[in-house]
Amino acid sequence: MQSLESELAAARDLDVADLADAIESIGFECTRCGGCCTGYAPGEPGGAPPGEGVDETEEAAPDRDSDDRDSDDREPHTATVFPDEVRRVADAAADRFDGSYDWRDVARPMPFGLDADGDGEPAGETFEWALATDDCGDCTFYEESDGRGACTVHDARPLICRTYPFSVALDGTSQPMGEAVDESGVVRAHECEGLGRDISREDAEELAAALKERAVRELEEAIGVRDGYDPSASDRVDGDIVVFDSEGPKEADGTPVDGD
Ligand code: SF4
Image 1 (cartoon, rainbow, N blue to C red):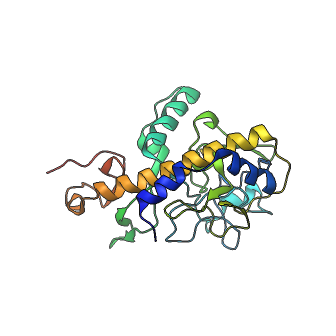
Image 2: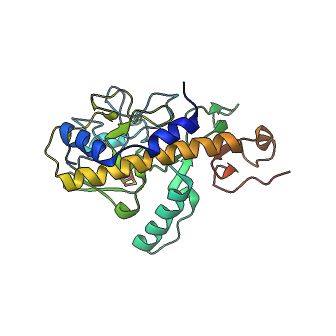
């Protein structure tokens, strides 16, 4: 396995035109099915298996309808969001809804890797943030009307959302929704009903640029987490969870953990 630094160099060398070629050859058009923004039921495609860092499902449930969202056994939508993206989404939501949004309104500790404490509550260390979800397990910023989904913070949505269902196959970059169903060069496509549809060159290039940006950001974040990891931080948190991101250790509500 290569070092994160060499992977980062490879990500920075990605050619956007090549990525756009790959996206064009695979094809994609968002159908606004909401699959990448909502929770999923057992047996539906969607969601990274436990242990995989990122999960973003564009086509999570071919036969899902909104009534299914009341089901108790649905797994919550789980998509990685970077620390600066949390703040940007919070600002966008505050503008959109004319209210105050804090860290907890936008993000929750990534559950993968956390253990359960004696009361069954999650506890331990985790290394990413996930977008907050509502009682149905859907992204809290997802809205649906007449069967068509919409993102209420569309212009500020995280890179993972802007690039789904695609990923770049480099070590250290995330693979949303598990296995790829199609690939071209280093571009992987994950389950989504919008795959295979015509895409304009302009849209493919925009997506490709975001995909490169995401690959670089994921590796920069991973390096920041690695370099800032402080195992003693777990002893200084007020709660049971410590989240290590590239800015350092944080409480579950996003409050930085004080140093010694
Ligand atoms: S932020 Fe927007 S695009 Fe991303 S999962 Fe939530 S509703 Fe969907």
